[in-house]
Image (cartoon, rainbow, N blue to C red):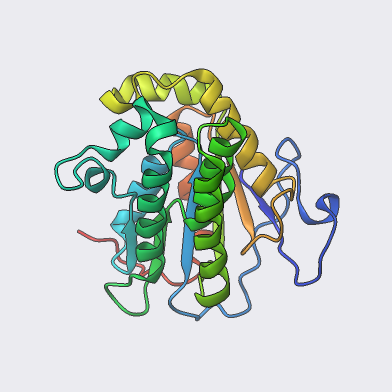
Length: 256
């Protein structure tokens, strides 16, 4: 079952703020207040291969839900260069350039809204860029210290000068082993050499950020899904929580 964690204004301990993943599901999200509010943003987070595409594709049926996926095709063709492939092949050389590119992409998505009064769903965010992927590079010593410090300054400036609206974080929590199997099935060439240890590190960092409160105050409540389930079962659970996620914003008539 999916699990809802609450985000309070006052600083709280991790035990008070977060319901650990193995616990039974709490009551449904209470969206009675501000149900008519428009222009909300949901960010969908999780490891590589956790099921983000499955989640986002479910909500394509709604007319006023705007889906913004990671611009992987753009990353694979920057003036003819495949930045994603370069990153996987030689992280020490290309990590700073690639994370600058991802930070820019995420910032554009946070500020982009093609239609007013929509619910915007983002695949990942500027927050996971900082707290998971950049942090993993630092811990793995795959980015020079000066490059990491420069990237941190970018993110500090964004924190101070940009309003990054997030109303709900959906965390698709899948084990690294499940992610490996799904990556094999989708067979992206850039992911062919991704080791299990990399996925294990990202899994830990996502948990540290979203479940254990080790990366500071969260920007929004967190809804956790058990993404180890078979995809049809995961799709069924997504459907059962769709009303809570849409929070009264989605039109009742699906896109034909």
